[in-house]
Image (cartoon, rainbow, N blue to C red; front, side, top):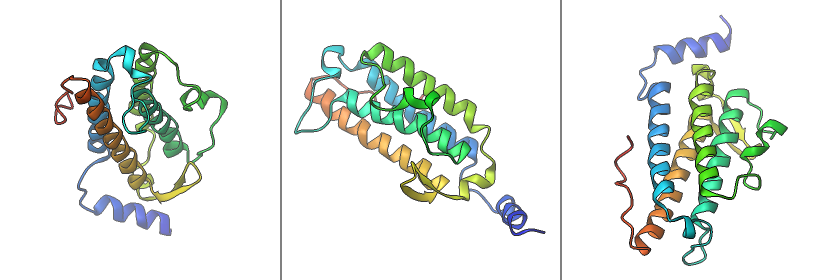
Length: 174
C-alpha cells in the first residue's frame, strides 16, 4: 500500500464534519445571499457609492467573482495560473453594468456546481498555494473564499443601510 493510498483510506474512514457536497451547498448558500444583495443594490449607486474609503459594491463583487471563478479552476486543476479562457474572471475584465455582473455571477455559480464534481475527496486535504501565493489546505482555501465573501457582503450591507435600504436577512441562503 502506497502512502497516498493509505492517506485516502484513512480519509474515508474518518468521520467528517461536512461532506464535500455539504461544503459546496454551504458556499452556494452564501453565493445565493450575495446575489440577492447585488439585485437590490441601486444601479445608480452600485459603481460609485463608497463610505470611509472602502471599495464600491461593484468593486467588492468583482473581487468575489474573480476569487471564485479563478479559485475553482485552481482547486480542480492545481494550476493557479490564469489562462486565456479564464481571463473573463479577472477583476479588470469583469463587465461594467450590474446586469452583466449578475450574469457573470450566475456563470461562476454554475461553474462551481459543475467543477465541484471533479474534485477528488483527497484533494480537500492537499496543501496548495492559491494563486501561487496563499499556502494552505484546499479546504482552508475554500473556507477563506467563503469568509471573504461574508466580509465583503457585510460591507455592502452597511452601504445598503446607509442608503435606507433593508438588506436581505443574513440567514436566508435559499
